[in-house]
Image (cartoon, rainbow, N blue to C red; front, side):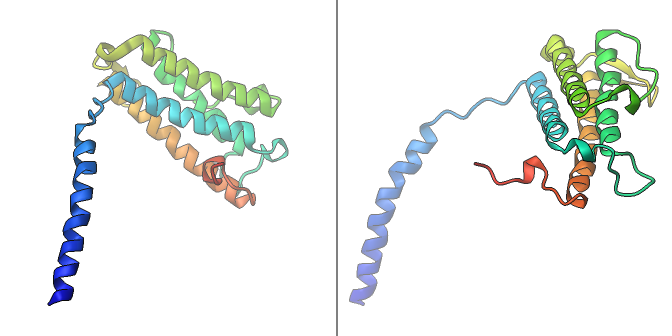
Length: 188
């Protein structure tokens, strides 16, 4: 019985010390949500950063590697992922859409050229998102693939998701080549 009383007293004492820290946590202001354009921009920049990191990291002598003959090479995957973003960016800027989804590998002679193209493609998209702002995220544009009106924010999400699919494929290329993707490495 005496042991139970001591345990209860100890638990009461511990809970007394825990209450002020919980009360302090409740006093901290909760951050407001990102605006719609901030949320879209953050996702756009995140996948752009990941693909750019891969473009800059993967060994140049393996840029024409592909896990099997039916797939694109590592370089072609990057060029495709970056190239299709111009269907988004150009639509937002009122420019003509690209004639094709896949920039030609022979037009990019080096790893540095491809990495620069990937980086520029996502920077151009980010600039278009910033220019639209929050109000512009609700603007309607025609999706040329579906021939349907869509909100800019929804259209952006489709391209972000598409880029994420290619990021996942490229992560497999890394693993098949015996390498570890930058995002999977231990953080310093």
